[in-house]
Image 1 (cartoon, rainbow, N blue to C red):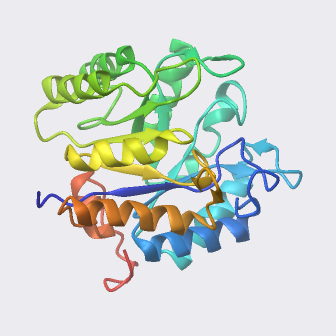
Image 2: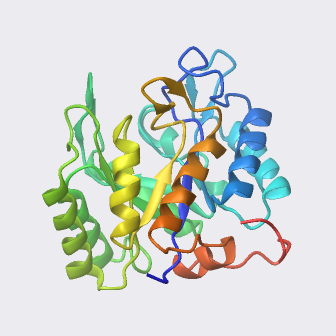
Length: 286
């Protein structure tokens, strides 16, 4: 294969703490430093949450603003994707950072079970988040925890609530949600290509020990890959991941084994139809 693979690094999330792995970046400065190392290792999208000083999740737009400023300074050209996930806030507070105009934001378009609760994404909130992304020129990444979420994205696109071709990410391995199942994974790909076209880009994320499996499946199948300490804090059963960059380098190795070049930030922006920032250095690391 010659199509470049976009690597997304989910640096922090809402759940892992330094008690789980000391490498989890919590403060804005830690997040910028960790992302910069991952950027140099090959990641071209950063999926970002912010935290309070006590490590609990936050939706504070001021924290997101400081993070965005630091990332643009130290990782020029990298695609910045903010999370609108439900663990960090409730209702419209989940989209309070969208006026900052990040390149992308996650968008869960339906509800599903999580390990200990229901991950609620009611239709009115989903449509409000989508409308805010349209208003501020933010490209959504559709978080598909279930097959119905892919079809919901098609329905929303047909109604003009999503601009352009949706970028769908399959999330597998969350306890009580969709397990890691190869037949389902293949049908997800089939469904995206049937609804959005053979060339529609897609990504996959696996949780915990499933991260490596989904990285391998996605890269071999021509999709894009997500890694990072948000989803998985270990390299293997016996070793904690020393950094987000270490997990990125593992994905780069899988790309090499599958003859997939790793996308530069310029290529990633072209694939996802995102503008090329005029102030980014053309020679910046990808």
